[in-house]
Image 1: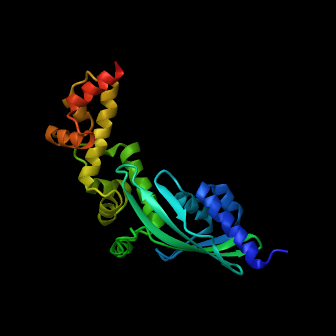
Image 2: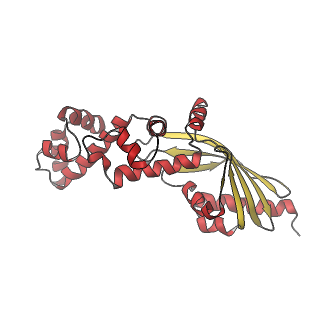
Image 3: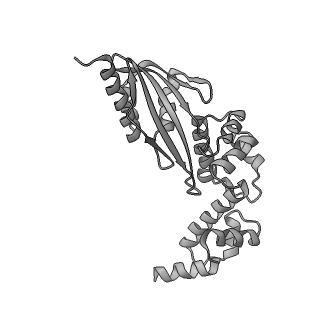
Length: 255
C-alpha cells in the first residue's frame, strides 16, 4: 500500500502535468470542494467561487510559459513545487521571467490548500518587485491587467482615436496611471506613446493589404495618426521601409 508521502507525490505530479498542459478540468478534478488558494505576493485569499477563474488566468498560453525545475519535494501530506515562468509580450515579443513555489496540502487524494509564493518581477530586477507591491499588482492581477489592456486596445481598437491619452485608458479600464505606466514600461518594455503608435501601424498594414491603391495619408488618418511625421517614423521603425516601398514590395509579392 502506498505511503502517505507517495500518495501526496502522485497528486502533486498530476497537478503539475495538468498545469503544464493547460488542463483546467484536470486541475479542478484533484481539488477538494473547498480548496483554498493563498497568494503571498499580494497577501490575499482566493474565494471558492473564484478559484476556477483564478486558475484559468494563470494557465500556460502564448504569452505565459511555466518551467518546472525539479520533481515536487514531498513530506507527508505537504508538497513543495519549484518553478519559473516566462511572460512574453504578444506586442513586443520581449520576455520577463520570474520564479516561485507552490506549497500544497494534499489529503485523501485531493489538494485542500495551495500557498503560492511567486513574483512577476524580473529575476534580474529585484527592485521592481517592491514597486509592483506599492501599486497593488500581484502576479495574477498583472496577468488580468495584460488581458484587459489587450482587449481595450485590440478588440475595442482604442488606438484609432488620434487624441488618445493615458488618462483615457485610466477611465476606460479602471486601472491607475501608476499601474498602467508599470505595465507599459516593465512588461511591454515600451512607452505608452510607442505602444499605441505601433498598434496604429499594424492597423494601417492590415488596411493597405486590402487596398494597395488607397491614399497613404487617408489610411494613416483612419489608423489614428494625426501627424504624417509620426506615422512615417513609426512605420519605418516597425518595417524598416517607407510606406511606398513597403506597398511596392507587397504588390510585387502578390504578382
